[in-house]
Image (tube, one colour):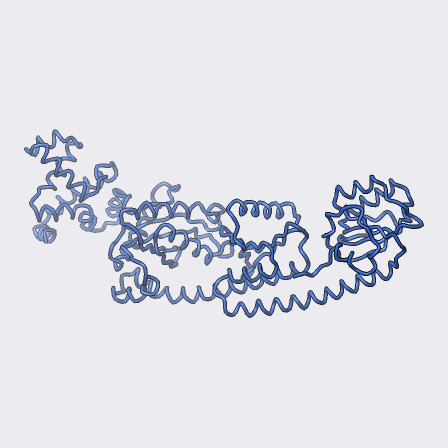
Length: 537
């Protein structure tokens, strides 16, 4: 990647054998793009930067102030250094000039003998032109190797590694919230580099940093950065940065195509899964590949509804899916994603303890809602409905249906509500069912079936105890008195009710739902003996 000359390298050429560096030694690694012979002293509009200036000093002729003004202009224009022929017009360099040059690490080189400036420029320009041709050849070679690499790689890290080894500089890839450093650095160094990048983008100062946008399907997919702290980036490095960004865009485009093809294939069987039309055996065959080494203990479905006014051009849906998948993987879920109408459906299969699934799912949803996408409204999720948890994966369609129902209920509630678990809606679920004039048997049994079954099996009279306990407003003394039992027996029954109904069954919302279902249960049982018989079976 060496495509430039430095002042120090030029000093090794044959015409500089009699030269002496009298100031700015720290700037000898300055890059030289061209050599100019310059005798005028007003030069602000004549230079473009990185020029090595040759002069006899005729322009200032021992005038220190003019000399200082000339030197100041050279530094302002970004010149690489100044070579002065000591002789007729200049006999010595004032100490003030030397001090000024040292302050800015600007090299001043003296020729103690007469030298042919024309031959110097011819020599250096020939060298620069040859390097330019070599740069084109090197860039072509790099591009060919990069194209070959694209045919066999499976991850963008391999492209970043190849680019980093070729440049031997710090490489950074930023894809929205995901930032990759090559080579890897410490967390403290990561923050420092990110700050340098952000400042460069704000201040437009990019001599030491290269920034290239990665565009996929006319959208900004991410940015690739190349950083060098010791010097300015070379033209070859910047061109290689551009080629690498193009290669990454091609890689991501291929991934998008593969992802789209896989999504189409997955959509068919996942649609059947969520419709309850897929047998357990068929489901296991589809899940076998992704879950061969993973133990799954049930799962839940989260339904995300986004705004109907969203536009696909304002966000990268494929990247967002990758982000969501990574997010919930960290929370202990294996994730399947499918789009249905105006919903994005997340099937969360639990890989950890059943007891913590709800807390982990809540953490995942909270992180999802706090992403930059959501904050900037590039991916405006309006509502999220999370269905009940099922141990049997064939029952995921039930969780999906109730996730949809949760969103429908949320639409009737506070518009600021963004996330709800179906299990937490309690009375609202019942109100919804009544409003829709649907059969209440299912919801009654959803709450009371564990107690009914337990009474049927052990004749424990838990239903009677539950009804009396609620009627007594949770007073244990009054409940025991009405049931004609000792308080120890009551405590045992209440403990059993907590295990069957949940320890929160006396919380206001859930208690209201249980009281409603108790009344509904009594009503259903008094309507007909056939109904009663069906519930007892």
